[in-house]
Image (cartoon, rainbow, N blue to C red; front, side, top):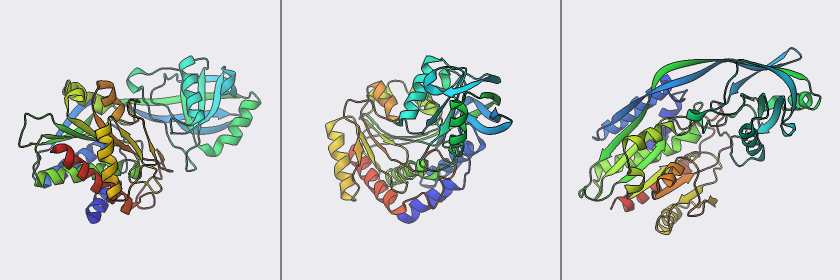
Amino acid sequence: MQHTVQADITAWDEILDHRTGSSGDAATSAWLASAIAAVGAVPHIDALSFDRLVPQKCSITIDEQCLDGVPLFDCLISPLIEAPLHPLAMGKGIGVTAFSPSARHPGTEALLQAREKSLHRGIVAISEGGTEGLSLLNADQFSRAYGPPVLQVDGRHKDSLMRAATNGLTGRMSFEIDRQSTQASNVQTTVRGADPSLAPLVIMTPKSAWWTCTAERSGGIVAWLACVRHFAANPPRRNVLFTANTGHELGHTGLEHYLREHKNLGASAHSWIHLGANLAAVDSILRFQPSNDELSTMGITHLAAVDIHPGSSTSIGTRPGGEACNIYDEGGQYLSLLGSNRWFHHPDDRWPHSIDLDRITRITEAVVRIAKDLAT
């Protein structure tokens, strides 16, 4: 299996840009459809109209020093803001704070609270990810933008920006962003079961990301494809529905579209397997998210059989992270796997240095075994 897993990971890595609605998003759909067709299943590329944001020149200028950045994609944008810089807690002018792409980072929580209060004219958010550089935040409210303009900047500028904020220097934020009407796409297939009267199993994974994001996304993709290949060769008892969804970084746009197109499936499916972020990453700490005791026992058993043991878990009944939260909100049953990644949302998340090939191969084996149990 490891050879196939590596081939899938390198195929993902060769598509450099996986942002929703990009040419790379379309190339990913074409590649996945080809892989599905190669094993005799019937792929469906489900295209949806999409207004894509393409940042051009977005920056903060202080004393003639211009620092480029990337806007948050779910904030309200003003072309130009000029105001004194202050630490975020002061709640005025242009607030300055550090953040991490992890929602549990205290700076990220403070940024979220500041956005909700809308006390600032703008916010400069300094990236503090596991790797030096710029790791972006997901735009969870992409379809419902809110709060002041936010510019995400490279963490290497932290000291100078914090000094400027402490001294109340004036900053000039500018945003030039193009809007492009385009298409994004999900990829789907169904493997028919021997007893179609049974509620289906749904296996889902995201297929979009900010950059190449190989360790972040490819682990879910390879496990998803492994399940497609298994069931194409070994027909299940119940129908198995597969969906690889765009729009992960933009409020799960693709999954929301899929759930609208498949009304009541969230709750009526036998169960969902969510193959989330960072399963392939070096030193990834597995986060285990089951919706009930039966799925919890099944998942732990199959993971332990390949010597994979979760480092954290989301309590049953608690709203989970990743796309599993959409299924939770629909009242459905799910087993969700996520991980950690020092290159999370960072441009340097690439094959081979960010990938633990042996570990993701074992996780993939466990996922196929879990899917086999749930499909019968």
